[in-house]
Length: 150
Image 1 (cartoon, rainbow, N blue to C red):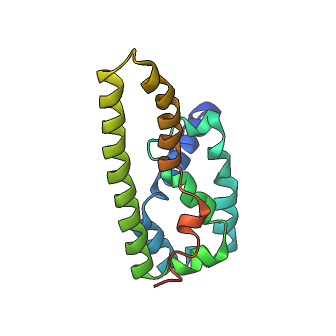
Image 2 (tube, rainbow, N blue to C red):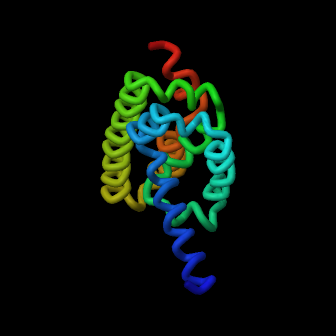
């Protein structure tokens, strides 16, 4: 294998793995099998943080995986993922986020196409775009210690 094809394969494998981290059930699987207790694996998760850089992040189909990659840097989060109940709760919250995002985005797109030259809506549209960003970017407050309440 040439260096170029090895680099390409490594890129594809790491891309696929990082995106798998967006699945709470997969995270539960890894936690139950002890991967998160292996320091080499934890170091690998830290190494994968380069996917947050724009030149790499634009390849991701599931940006939620970056949020989970961040959370996996914390031992408490890794430990809690061993609970199937915790993984289910996170999965449910993820589905609710997607549903809310889809509905809101559809509504915003309809408003945009119905009144493209209306000045008041143009002003609101920039605020609505900011709202969209807020919806798709979870904050630490929403997911931190999410399993502690259970």
